[in-house]
Length: 189
Image (cartoon, rainbow, N blue to C red):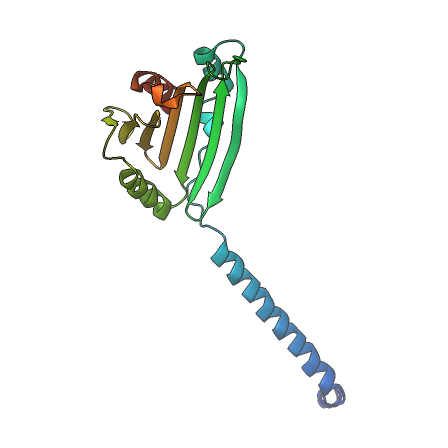
């Protein structure tokens, strides 16, 4: 036993530089791996709630019910995450070749992907509400208003801020709250 111990000590003494070099390389690799892990965690958003997809909330079949058989998809965008929110878009038109008369139904959904994003949605929804040309809408989501100037219905529903537009694409200010509510009911069902 003493002989094995003496042999091991001699081997270690003869290869001391190789052991130190190997240990140093392992330590540096651990430090680099730890730094990369911390960086990735710090720069990747903390997704607690999966973002909504606008075209899942308002699909082709539902759009066809509103806009007819010649329906064309104009916009499809899966959720794009930025900080604590994610934005998704979906839009359709009735296929009318006269752009001045074409009817458009469009949905933009901004989802809070974590508690901070949900709070941000609610704060910015309230802050973005114009003081003029606004009509409060009852019994729709948690809170809702129709922006007459833009022809858009804004709805806060749980973790989502949904912006809906339904009417003549060339003149969105002519959109009505009644039409926007029809679209909203399809989206929120």
